[in-house]
Amino acid sequence: MSRLTLYGQVAEKAADLVVREYSTSFGMATRLLAPWCRVHVRNIYALVRLADEVVDGATEEAGGDVDAARRLLDRLEEDTDEAIATGYSTNVLVHAFAATAREAGFATELTAPFFASMRTDLHRTVHDAQSLADYVYGSAEVVGLMCLKVFLLEEPAAVRAARYTELTPGARALGAAFQKVNFLRDLADDADRLGRRYFPDIDPQHLTEAEKDEILCDINDDLRIARAAIADLPAQARRAVAVAAGLFGELSCRLAATPAEQIIRTRVSVPTPVKLRVAARALRDRGTPAPHPTPTPVG
Image 1: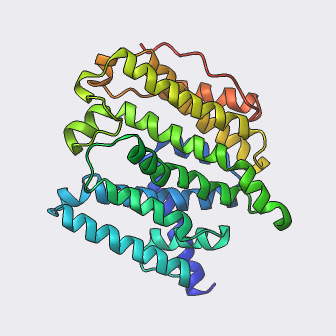
Image 2: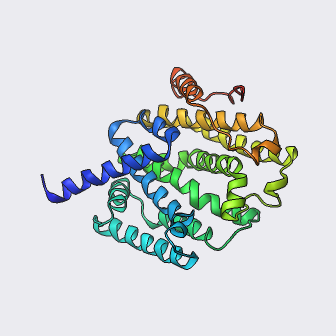
């Protein structure tokens, strides 16, 4: 075994550890992917988490300020671009991500918007409709597109571009839904700890039922678009994406069942037994489009 091959395997194991430590829901869904596909998707997620940590408090806890975080993020983007070009990085998570990007066939057309959104978190605290749309595209929709590139790797080369175009709306919609659900769930923490307000014209400390319902309506529209595309995904990805959509659909339902005044005080989550039931339902349906799930009692 060559030194580079060994290093690549270590990098993949590091990315796998990041997924297991940071996200039980995402980790559960990725276990349903074909093994080769799972490695690539976890490589993508690990770099996303690495960048998130730079802007979401780790830099500050280490004694740095906004300028320090910006320098670190710039350096991370430069390292990522170079690794995609050369196939090597001394940062194991960047190395793993670059290996996936090179094989799946994406580069700055997707990574540049991602890093631009991460950079936005360092200087913008209040969003309007356009800046939110730009932010969600870069922070979440392009991640969905990166994963879609991976899912299509075993499609015939002659149809791959057309399939990517066909499935792009669903991939973007699912990424957007994930991000907006997280924004709503973390409304108070984002405002209090990070000083950010993502939803335009909404005061996180005085969220109304009407505002909550409007946000959830938008999220559910995204989820409907995403679900409609799931059946057309390659078989190696269909079940995993269905489970991920189901888990976030369940979280959306639980947020709908939670009073607005409680959302700003308590972080709503999906208990593990409910996650397992949602996953079982998605597997039973074999990844076919399903209606919006019936809310599970919150108590």
